[in-house]
Image (cartoon, rainbow, N blue to C red; front, side, top):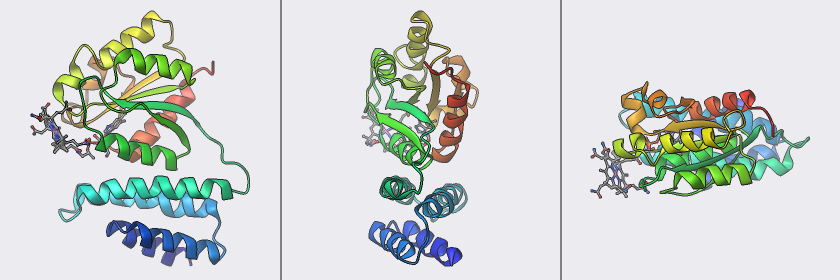
Length: 222
Ligand code: B12
């Protein structure tokens, strides 16, 4: 039964048809599929399938990429109250785009993936000053600061990740908060994250989720 649900859900997502995706979810629940199975066996694998299609299939497009992550986040939010035992939230991250950068699509995709992977993620928006990343991470007790930067100068400039690293160091927060970056400039140069002071980077939403979950495990709870 799960195989046909997975197929129908993937087709709906591939067509960016949110209503159809939710109809598949509701039918599956009515047939007795658990909320846990919907999230872990249907929704998250669908995001992984879409990510690999995006890279391999010339017919896959940005709208499909974007909608997969949005639908995943919405379905997961709907399923969580139905879990038999409260799902274990792995930890909290704050995310935003670097100072001077208004590109938001990649960040939103990453957020959708993180939510479906049980990471509590708080969106600080676009054009976020370095101080705000750090202040909000402290205020919200986040273990990870995630910075999206789509332009070379916002990825490498003095007001972005480099400044966040400097502030973490100055405020003695480096063992409590990890720093992760993503966006096109990091894909072009996979070593760039190190030179701007990040602990890690990831090329897409699903790998961002995996990297961030790993970073959270390294952090000493406050
Ligand atoms: C859409 C777009 C815009 C839209 C943004 C709409 C929006 N709400 O986001 C608009 C039209 C507003 C725009 C404006 C500008 N843009 Co623009 N834009 C693009 C474009 C075409 C696509 C970007 C995008 O959304 N990609 C799709 C998403 C899904 O991919 P992504 O962001 O990389 O995200 C994925 C990964 O990188 C990763 N990821 C992303 N963030 C994070 C964060 C973390 C923590 C992790 C782990 C992973 C991760 O996961 C995501 C999901 O898989 C790119 C060109 C391109 N092909 O990349 C140019 C591009 C980024 N823009 C560019 C420029 C120059 C500009 C402008 C300066 C143009 C102008 N003269 O006004 C302005 C800048 C405004 C500003 N201050 O930010 C240049 C940057 C050049 C450079 N080398 O720096 C590019 C590369 C175009 C080009 N070839 O010249 N842009």
